[in-house]
Length: 77
Image 1 (tube, rainbow, N blue to C red):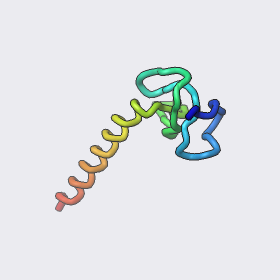
Image 2: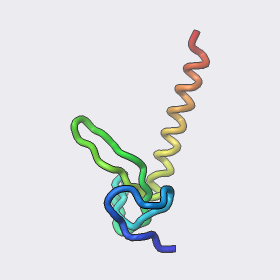
Image 3: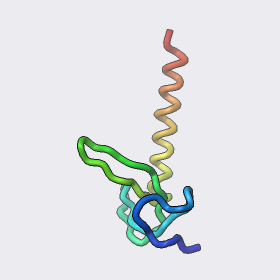
């Protein structure tokens, strides 16, 4: 299946890839990428599109951080 061409903004069908550049780690071009949301770093902000191989470790990191926060809340007096 070929992903639709990249458009500006979020694709019309959430959760569906578009063809574009991975802006997370690998920098792959003309690959299926998914909208991961907006990223803010200081005064700069941009939309983040990423390929599945880059999104998977990011998702694991986010889940691990959320799990650690939940454990800390449960242990707090």
